[in-house]
Structure formats: structure tokens, C-alpha cells
Image (cartoon, rainbow, N blue to C red; front, side):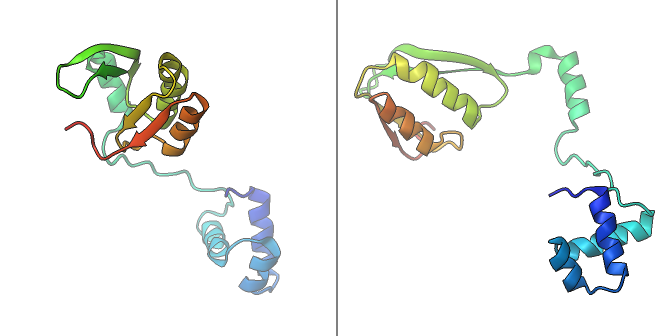
Length: 161
């Protein structure tokens, strides 16, 4: 939670008036460690403003990534998802239902939009949909959308290798 500069100042002033850390914590509803941090910040900087965050990039610097993509526009992956209408006898797929092309990575919101607005309306009633346990396959939401549209959902371990 972020606290206003005036709130921090009043908290430290209250403590400096001779109240204990426990009293100050109770009155201002902040932790003792927070009060100590604010006091340390004030002693070091003379201000009650929060220090700016020091951003360190553990994997990829976003500025370098943007400049690389600008220089190499074909480096961005495009993906297409869809439900393959096939059979289990290994004879291949007949068609792809509800394709969606997107840039970047799949996430829960994108999956739910595709699942609810594109896939389910294209399927007949009583269809069974089997999904793997990908993190963006939000099971509870998928189940609710299926029930609302007369379909059934099932989750298994990784389906494709």
C-alpha cells in the first residue's frame, strides 16, 4: 500500500513526540517495520518521498528489446490457435474451427475471449472439449463457459508432446 507524504511525516512526528513504536503503529495502522523504514528514509534524505525504484533487468532490457524489434520486424512471432476437428484413429484433421491469430504469448484473458466468443459458438451442443493444463486454461472459467453453452470440459496432463 502506498502512503501519502503528509501521512508519513505525521507518523514520524508522532513517534518523535515520545510515543513508543507500538503506540505509533497502533494509532496510524502501519507496521513497526514501515515506521522504521520511513524514519531511516527521512534521516538519509531529509524527505518523506519514496525512493524511485531501481529497475534491474534480469533477462532482457525492454529498451534494447524494442530497438531490436524495430530493426528486425520479422522477429516477432505470430501464432494461430484453433480447434482441430480430427479423430483419434490417426487419420489426420478435417478442418480448423475458430482460428485466431495473435502476436506475443497466450494469456488467460486472450484464451477466455477466444474460448467464449469464437470457439464455443462454433461447436454443436454436448461437445466434449479436452484441454491440457496450460496455465492460461483457467479451469473454473472454462467450465462455466462450457456449461453456459451446453458443452463439457475435461482437463488432462499434457496432450501433445
